[in-house]
Length: 105
Image 1 (cartoon, rainbow, N blue to C red):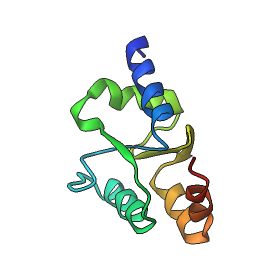
Image 2: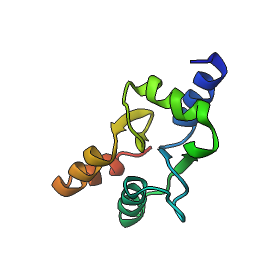
Image 3: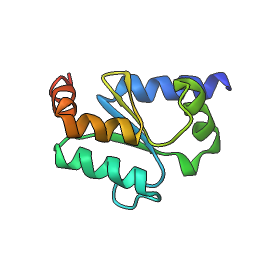
Image 4: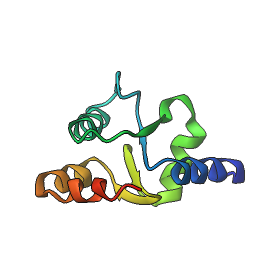
């Protein structure tokens, strides 16, 4: 991965309490998984920053390499990778996501 892309990703993750890499925007997600993430975070009233990876193919590939996770969306909280759609939905269903989000600095 290009060093400037890595720095951009690290800056996004470290500068935002909740960072979501998704397809589309929260108001107009372009895949069902991204919509599910947006819906769950909205349900928790969790303010988050997002990156529409469809606008930048280098970020789209770079985030997969950065996290060593092959799919989008990806959710980071307090600089830590939480997971993709299935993981976040499981955390929501078990009540763990509420605890994680309560720990947002």
